[in-house]
Length: 244
Image 1 (cartoon, helix red, strand yellow):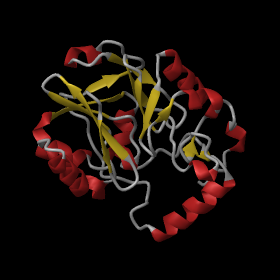
Image 2 (cartoon, one colour):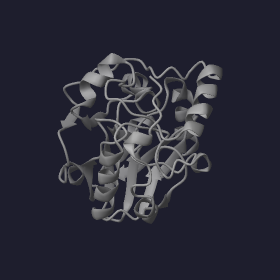
Image 3 (cartoon, one colour):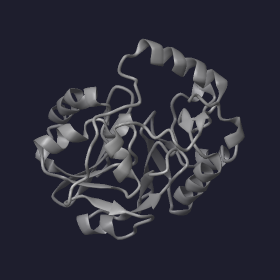
Image 4 (cartoon, helix red, strand yellow):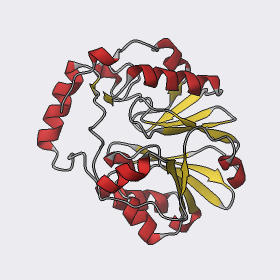
């Protein structure tokens, strides 16, 4: 069964069938929760069927409605151990440098930040609970326990707490490890903000080595994993345009 894509305001949430329901990849901005619930209803899926939530990283457009969804249903969250303190801050981590992938992207982002009152790089703080699961690196066992053939990989480069999923069938749920939007801005399959390009490309190689064939990004449409190979190394950390 193919994953279900649920587009939100600027990102995609994915539902992967698992034992007894679905594994969800990420949430969206806090204000996306109502739209997410409508999308579930249109797809004929009850919220309680979402039994697990894999958080690729702590950023506002991925962890924004964690408080809402955990209030309304019981599920288990899986996240990297470095996400735990970052989620408590309620803000995107700015302590590790990085920047926009080029000056044009920064120009566009600056305009959006001025015009969009929701784009504050903050989110409601969230405390992971006893029932949630933290991983320290790659995990090749956990998904099999819920009926999914695949592995979870530690994929830093966009953020220090980033993880992704590669299914045995070749589907990759990469969060912000890569993106296909906005390619017209010269992003070269990176997300608009990155922290460490060497780490990012090592993460890309890891996704390819794990058998990734089709990438399902948080931003943009699915694309062939070969695009990662073709664009490997095209942006350096030194080229990133700082904005804080």
